[in-house]
Image (cartoon, rainbow, N blue to C red):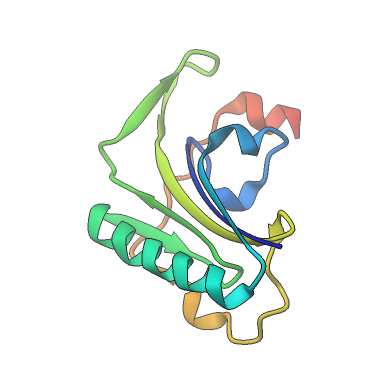
Length: 123
């Protein structure tokens, strides 16, 4: 089973912290990889047009952000970048079986490395 998942949160999707699923805002499931890939690509195109920055990886994990969109974290006392992410997963894990993944690794800039200290301590 394949999942196309949209998330909104203060970390990029490739971290897969223990509570990462709480950031899910939409989920679509597919039996066929190519059906899931079609939806993933459509969502990527829409997000590239909507956000000023993005980074995607060859394992179908992508994040998008506007630098001015930050949220205050009470626990660490800092503003954290708000990310809008998109993933294509296979049984809730990154896809590794698809041979032609490299074209999906793109970036318009580096993600700001600022992460809530409470999440780092818990991992």
